[in-house]
Length: 104
Image 1 (cartoon, rainbow, N blue to C red):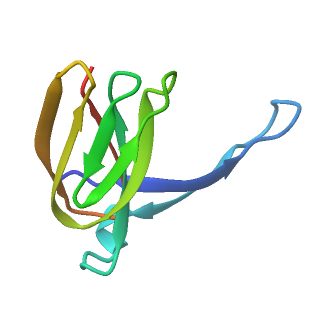
Image 2 (tube, rainbow, N blue to C red):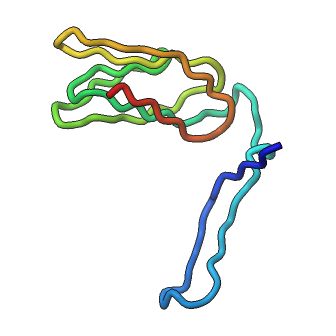
């Protein structure tokens, strides 16, 4: 089995000498229920209209990414552009974490 941890914080000495401390929690200890959300960052061509489940976001002309908060479970994410290019996929959001999906 693989044990994964979510780093919650860290510190290190200013002089770069001495011990570094890392605070982490096992992902197995995080709740896994529909009441919790995960962050999903979508990366797409500038100016695209992004969708995450029932949420939509219009990217500005210079922006290429946006982060949504979405419930756990199967989530459809996608984008479309004024030029007619489009893409979509289904992501399984299974834990309280940060997911990234690039369409470029």
